[in-house]
Length: 88
Picture 1 (tube, rainbow, N blue to C red):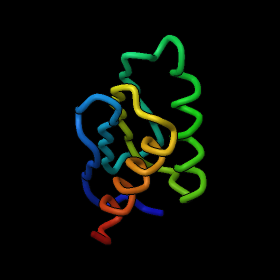
Picture 2: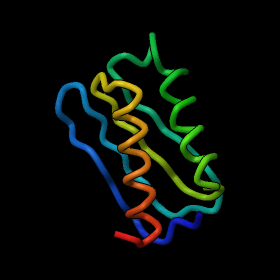
Picture 3: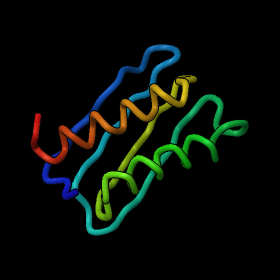
């Protein structure tokens, strides 16, 4: 999947996550989370899984987590990807 435009999904509300994605020359993921010390590795693993499942090789992804569950993080990343590839 090729990311052709900047896109985002989610909110900054408690128990949600805000995900930004933009075109880039390589794949990078940044994480800001109030639970990063405890769950940062698990959050990054979920983001990585979604990117791999969608064959994303070049993008800059920024996740601002507010204590979201795994299913919410997955949904926010998937939505941002769909928007970033220009389908929505």
